[in-house]
Length: 415
Image (cartoon, rainbow, N blue to C red; front, top):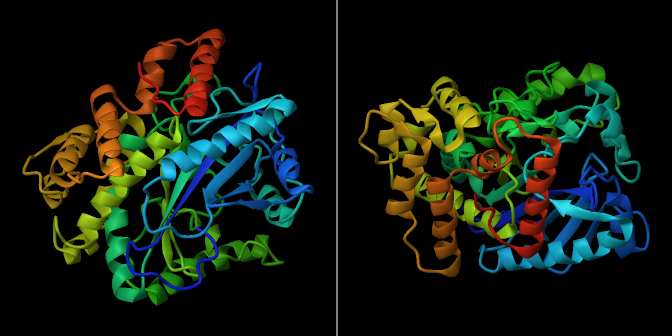
């Protein structure tokens, strides 16, 4: 969410960013032509171009393009169709370059050591700094596509409520959004490999990502003093030019963007089409509103949670998605579920039944998509069923070609 002119009240402004891989239309291997795509529209190499309600921009790797709302929006209504229309336009522009867009959170067989091409144009100093310090020829930098959701807040009281709600919900987001079960052409046993490589990609400086689940911090000043100041200090010896000394260096699963007074969620894998992405986002926003407004549990109780129990649930969801077992009765009780244990999918079914009762098109679509995820599994689970236990390259190509078709046609991937 860019260029917000003023601080917007809680949930009154949202920003959505969807990242996609550019792949060769014939082989489906990564195709590093994001700069040529943007140049085809701008007439010159550009790192971002405005296209009406949305903008297109580059990322670190040349085979990734980001499509995002052009500033904050008050509602998700109509966004799925808008994003789908831009996907069609991008695919039309990629056709002469031999490319097409591929969804999901990771490319299934990319070799980042051999195939990574770093963005060489505007803002390249940022990417060159990352590459020099961390070596970006790794999955955790060059091969991961996500959905970023920015949510507005105004003042410390709203920041505290939103941050408490976000960190409490983060652990079960992979249970509806995991879409990266294949890595290096093989199954790893995890449903969300993107989050696994994401949390480990900057281990040299642990303060940058922390433990992915953010610390319990309740004011903007406290956040700057306890978290940002430390990671700036830790990166300083490796970044003498202070190129990376910005709040986006913070790589937790949700980060405050104080220059625009939002919290940005980074946990969600990209789904098979914008309809599914917006539905997942709508489900997340509905639950966050209930948490932040104290409709499920007192917000003060959410603020007291330490990282450890949340982290345990998160790691389980990264491994098992909707089948992750939650055995923390206190966590379930905070969502209004009086059970000693259940799966993450069962918890989401409860949340859908109790909270997602609106009658707008966005609400109805969210329920339909969430029902597919709960009953048939996350996109990662559906991919697993189709590729089989020992997937061949031929079978993977067949499945991921269909996923490209799902993206271009705006439909769900059903197993």
